[in-house]
Length: 118
Length: 191
Image (cartoon, rainbow over all chains, first blue to last red; front, side):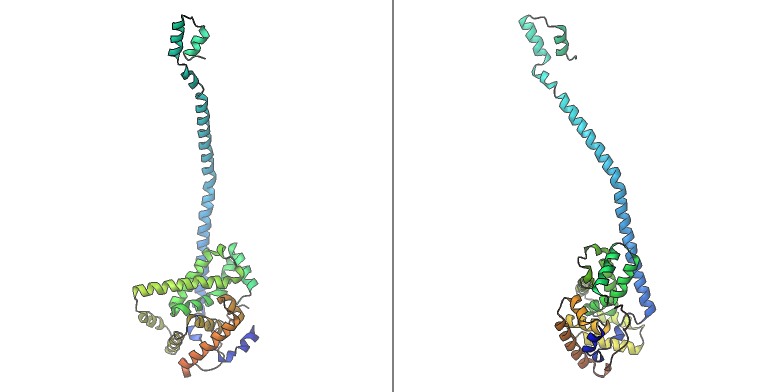
């Protein structure tokens, strides 16, 4: 590396010492220390936000799982309730009317079923 | 300047959060970052601020540095962007720069302040690329190979820029700039 610089004729180099920010060594060292300190502090802050997000992630997922279970159960129950809807196709009033029209005496179980019993 | 491998190692360790790696990167590249900023804005105090801000920005987004062995080139791009933003806002606000510069020189010995003023004035006659090359070479003691990699130019271009920059500066500075190797910034860099 030094050879490379000698090839360039370092004896011709411009003296930029007056523009050297590290001329005041103490000040420059403090500047560097402050910069590193700030960078590390910002990094710690960012990591702490990420850690908080991770800490909240588990309860949030648990709540989401609970909600999805409730929603699934409600849907399942609703689909089960849809079954009696078929009786709506033969509403109790119609059954009763049919029996009356045909002068039939319904079995107690049929009557019970028509009126909503199990 | 650090070798490419050493730079990459420091970047990887800094990405893992090693405090010593942050220190190593700052020690190796804060002054060169200042030189790049100075090439664009022309004011030492602004250049120092920009170099520090750019470093903080670089550390924040260190995970996005795709080529850790070319950390300097990546950092310099952030420095240039910040410096240009400052120039744009300065133009918009139309702030008189001389007042700030005078204040800045108050704390310097008169002979140093005079030389600094002369150097800044002479540097203003160069284009940005020549300023970057001459400052990295003559202030930071970087080799043409290191400059070429960091500035994404050829070594031949680096040599040409340096040659012309020195010619222009010598013509402008005249007797104020004695010939000879200076020692002001030597030994500041781990090689």
